[in-house]
Image (tube, helix red, strand yellow):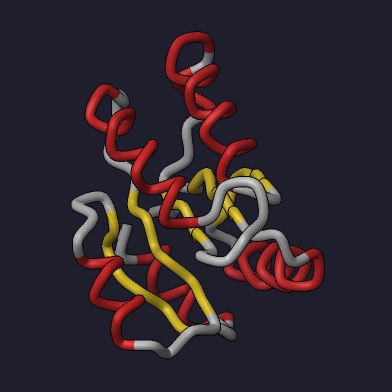
Length: 134
């Protein structure tokens, strides 16, 4: 039995993290497509267009950084909360941050869409575990 391939979205302003995450996600063999955005505004625009024009482009899972320019992770989540209920499929959202501040972890739990809070760096086995659970 073949494992379903997932559409993955990485929202993070760090080029090195985006590259590393892409390599690790590809190495799991579970990612069909990986879309990357450098801030929450780019991602929200993509989701708004995809919802109406190409719902098949919507990801199965989002890995979201908190600290980004233009629109940070918290602002993204506020906008995403208004959108995601009309999506044709559930999307798992993981907040991924280098912050170990308990207030950030607590805040992430206040968003219905957030599945978990992950502290960077996220290794291959953690990505594999999360994607296999989908």
